[in-house]
Amino acid sequence: MDGDLSAQMIAGIGRFFENETRLAAANRATFWKPDLTGGRAAFEKSVQPNRERLARILGVVDPRPAEIDLEYVATLSVPARIAETDRFVVYAVRWPVLEGLSAEGLLLQPNGAVLARVVALPDADQTPEVIAGLAPGLPPHLQYARRLAENGCQVIVPALVDRADTFSGNASLNLRTNRPHREWIYRQAFTLGRHPIGYEVQTILAAVDWFARQNGVAAASRRSGMDSTAPIGVVGWAEGGLLAFYSAALDQRIDSVLVSGYFAPRERLWDEPIYRNVFGLLPEFGDAEIAQLIAPRTLLVEHAPTPRVDGPPPARPGRAGAAPGRIVPLPGA
Figure 1 (cartoon, rainbow, N blue to C red):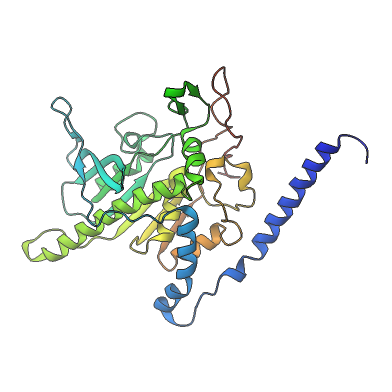
Figure 2: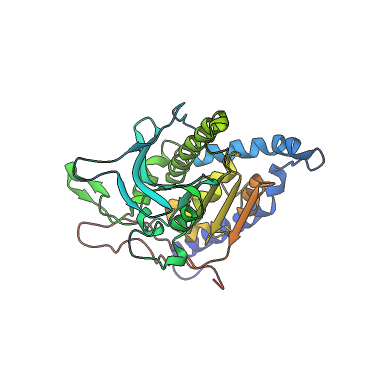
């Protein structure tokens, strides 16, 4: 052999793993035994082992509180009621998710009857206020949390972990890094069998727990003229679309899901940011297989533009060490 032997070895390792990834995709059917002959109950039972394995590799294994309630986030000078229109009111809220972990976001409460209950998920670099129409960043027709509330939906918009590196590091050791917050959490969660995707799915499912509780209260109070039981949905764009997709696959209480800007072959997952890497995912699950866990419920996939992420925040003195990885808009979007 001639030339740089180390470089040739690394190139060979890359070719080996790319081929193994292709073989894994070709062999996924061996993990699935869907029963398509016995009706919905039989189908759900036949794919339940796949759903349980997906939950485990995402780290969605910790119990949530038995009863979840939303609480207002407010001070004497900053009220929880932050906006209102003639159709809905917006509150700042938080809710418990796991021991030591709470979520925060917005509740958009319609003034009339609740026709549906929806968790609306922005991209990781958007705040809940952007898709609720309370902050700049989106034209009115794309403010989907606001539009849902205007049409009679009760909407919860969680705040997601963003891609900045502001808090990545250890102040007590005076160590900083340019790892995005999602990667900073990913690296620590990985050793414990957890994942930032799993934590945020738990945040969504905790909101679904609250929705289901509201449906139970409404069903028990129909005679008094309160809201009837409303369907539960999840909608998300870009990173929010990823989270909506996984959440609906894991929780059958979600009646419908809209995934915008996220649905594609995952065989080049290693090109994407490391915080999207899920150990053990590809041998059993591509996006098509995850979609199978949502069937026969409603899944809408919107081929939409996504934010372009060319890599982590730039390295600079005192801040380095982030993994490479890009998010490229889907072809034709």
